[in-house]
Length: 203
Image 1 (cartoon, helix red, strand yellow):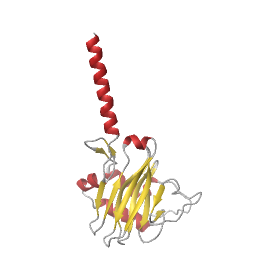
Image 2: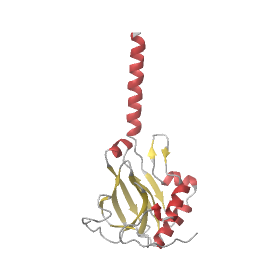
Image 3: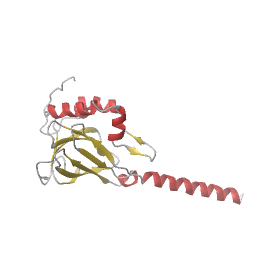
Image 4: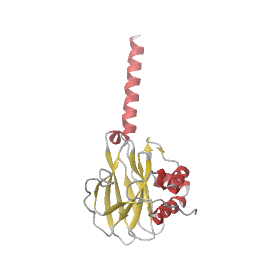
């Protein structure tokens, strides 16, 4: 009986250590843009994100301009991926914002402005070396660009270039099709201050 109890205790300890090891995993996600340049997303581990952490995004444009952005990552919030725009120095970060999807516009040519009380991004953008803005509903060009960028990713590319719940051997990711549908509906958002209701193109 004592031997059985010892075995059970060893198994329980082993399982606990496995869970801790899995929860501590964090791997860099690299996005290579077809027009040149790349972004690296370094999400926090599952264990760290439970208590509130950050995902570090490092971006380099085709011309060599660089920026680093630290975004909040916790159980409900965090960046999913980054897509390029027609401007080599402007990128769009698709961000899971608890109850909806937001798009953050990253401009490598401008300096970060200090966020004031009441700013939507306060608490989401923790630190940045360049300008970051929330894309409003009225900015339909950016929403269409995000849709197009995500749509042109193959399922293999999406698995490689999107973050997710890292369980060691694989990541549990937001479904690409559902994410596309959400983006076409402005991230399933309600109306935020300064937003206007417009419709996206069907492409």
